[in-house]
Amino acid sequence: MEDQITITVKRAKDLLGQKKFLAKIAELGVEIKLENNNVNLTSENAMNMSLVKNAIMAFNRGFDPKTSLLLLDDDYDLSIINVGDYASSQKRQIELIGRVIGSRGMIKKRLSVATSCYIKISGKTISIIGAYENIELAVSAVEMLLNGAKHDSVFLSIDRRKLEKYENGRYS
Image (cartoon, rainbow, N blue to C red; front, side):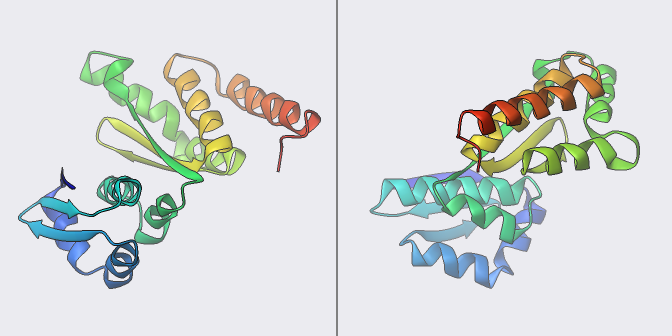
């Protein structure tokens, strides 16, 4: 089976220099051919190709190779939130992204630590990589911020949900 991903020209050039990243992908039996900024994937294994596709999409969104490779483990997932779904004007989208980033990046950093997820903001999208049980928490928190919730309320919600998981024996 075959698939194709279009990535930015800059990330396509960067991808060529990522020997460890490409070697790890090759171990999964997925062949990559780069034509300009199109990444062509070929594999006999649909699951592995899906994992590799997510890793390349994450790399394209600005995640470093090591973080992107987490997606080769099927316990991890990538979620991409389009800020345009929360505001139509460019000015409002910039304001919403600013709410997620916070002063000197502190809100984004706190979100990342509180949810044990990696968060990247690129253009009008917010990308999140994390283990399944954590990524839903991070996505929910980001969506709360995009919908106008106060920062303190978002972090209290994260703490409450983590406590509920712990009390129900689901927290690791």
